[in-house]
Image (cartoon, rainbow, N blue to C red; front, side):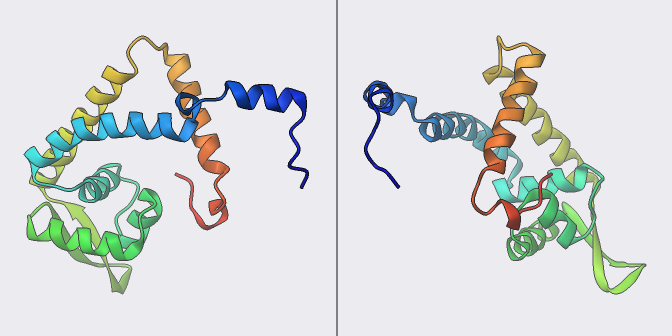
Length: 162
């Protein structure tokens, strides 16, 4: 690989500063939004991982630990531990899968549904606050670009897109 920068590259590099680092900007946005969401998580007594599991179940698209892991892009063992905690908190219930007696289906309890709805509303409120001033088209394009960036990650082939 030729590491000698062309005059055009050198000019662009000399204008590129810490404040232009995309990863840093994304991390800053994440940190600000996460701190705000953490207040809501603590009020409901759940972790960010537990919330992802609750939100996955609330979607209605998944009901087994494996499906939750794929949907949320969280390691299966982490999902299992989160489900253990959510079951202890009476937010989820495990039931034998009627189609496969070797596995379980998971469902939200009425309290789990309430917590999921509350946190989804809080998350939407935070998103709306930080996306204020952007049109719906700009928000869709922003999300499309973020998903495109995620699609460029080296481990992309190992991940399931949701």
